[in-house]
Each structure stands twice: as C-alpha cells, then as structure tokens.
Length: 162
Image (cartoon, rainbow, N blue to C red):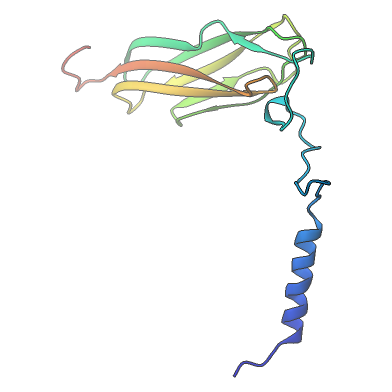
C-alpha cells in the first residue's frame, strides 16, 4: 500500500492554485483580451471610422518563367500603405528554405508611403515546377498577406522545356 506523501500533496495543491490564479476572468466568465493590440485579431468588431493601415501590393504573384538550376533569382514585391494609420510589417517568412526574405521595412510606413519586400530564390536542387509562398504579417486587416513566386527550374538532366 502506498504511503500518503504530504509534501507532494502540498506541492500539487500550490501548483494548482498558482495556475488558476494567473488567469483573469471578466464578469461573464471569459478570459480577457485587453492586451490585444492588433485589430485583426481582437474579438471586438473594428468600425470603419477607426484609423487602420492597409497594405496593397503592386503584384502578389511573380512568375520567373524558366530558370537554370543553380542560379539565384532576386524578386522585389512593391507595396503601398493605402490605409489611414502607420503600417508595421512585423514578420516576413517563406514556405521553404530555398526562398529567403532578405529585406523589408523595419520602421512604420506612413499612409500613402511605399515600401518593398526583397526575396531571393535559390534554384539549386529544385528542378521542376516551383511555387513558393511568402507570408507578410502586418498590423493591417487581414493581418497576413500571402505573396507567390513561381519558377520552372531546368537542369542538365531536363529533357524538355515546358
């Protein structure tokens, strides 16, 4: 028969109290969202009178066409803040390690101003059709914009061009 360990019981009870005392509950019994500062993720509706940034890319799809294996292609996606508040790009990531988001503005883009996201595609070992996605996370609504880069990579073993 197991012997009751009072120290273990007290430790578990203290952990339980610590975990549940850290949650803030409002009158309705729901967790508060007071710390959310990105309107696109808030639980309340955003009114049209609120000053919000908006991102508009000149082109969201760039087709590189035929690329020789081993070359690196640089692509620049141009955008404009078409909103009424400063636009902040918090992150730019890619769907694959062969595509690298090299440059994007790290400072707020004022309404009406333009910026660019520079991306490099490395075609080594990528023979065939390629579709790479670039995810731009901002404080605009919607918060994530997906850019697309396509290429047909041909190598020494390619027998036909498409």
